[in-house]
Length: 111
Image (cartoon, rainbow, N blue to C red):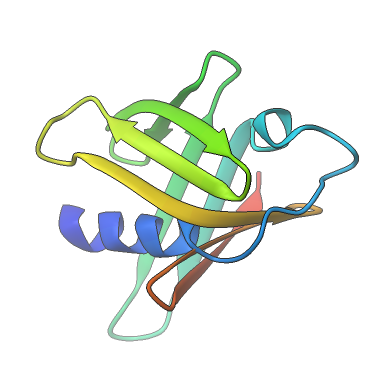
């Protein structure tokens, strides 16, 4: 289950080019809690990511680490070595965060 959620998170993080969100810098625009849901059978999952001002993130299972932004790339460095480092493309438009990687796309909504 954890691997499935991680794949979803990574896919979401690789969605599109970074867009401005109300004129805020990307590092400021991403701060907050983002959620996505897929209720279609057999998928039924929920992903939740929270980013804070200190450059830290946490997922719905409490796993987290540090994050950094470079242009339209979001890098997540998990504290747990087994999850490693993941870099994905992202775009913020209004209250939507889109992540893409290798053709996979996930859209999260600001909570």
